[in-house]
Image (cartoon, rainbow, N blue to C red):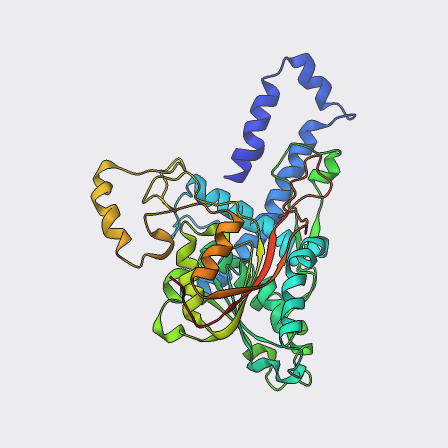
Length: 391
């Protein structure tokens, strides 16, 4: 699909130009056609990562191995809809942020304050004993933040709902064998705002560390081995962490670029309040680019085959029913809040804001060579659960 959507259609458009023009652009000074070929090669390289992660996932979930050349496709293989295509493309691109050396600038800006806040909170605990401190990372994505928190000595559980990201994070964390094992072309699918074609075709190597080796080294002198301190859960945060079994289970909840993934932020607050112990700390860094802004009720995560959000008249009676059920991110209602309103809600639910910082600037999977630079100025705060709820 990527070859068709990215290069095949562009070749058609290229040959639709007047012949004198496309012949000019095909000459060595421009070599547009050969650059389409180079993009195809980059797509194949990215696909190698995706296929390796898929094979790992098939084994993990008990499916038989699959050969892409097989004439008998398995029942789970179906043509992807536009939403799945977009999520798969963005997940591959996020490898740049989480697992390349070039993405370290973004990581340091966003993950660094979280690690520093943990160090300040538990400065009184010897490093060797920090494996007793339990940290939850909702929206763990490709797993780099949980990995870094584990390296720093803590017991950490990452939570992620996207199966695209769960599959890829599992492969990177558990099944890569060397630094720079895979070439990745993070910007190959986009043709706009490049100064040079080489910027579009930039290749980075992932992962920038061998996770197994790094965690083994981080276990030296520790009371608990790092392999026993890092885990990932695949579940809806609002459902799983409101359960009784997770009540007061964590000393810290750390969220990065996560709050705005909520249709209803109150559901996130309730889940954190349930799973965080009294006196525990919620550390957050991120913007408020509300992912479901403007969606009709009941359409969160639901799309037509063409990728557009949908809701039918027949679904309307079910909306009020959904409100009364714990459907997590699938609940019908939604609301977009300001940062100030977020803080007021935290206070209402018994959290005390202890630290607030503004002015950090960062991109999100941002190509530093691009002529277009999107910059976030996220809110960074620490909120302590007081054990009291105010009404």
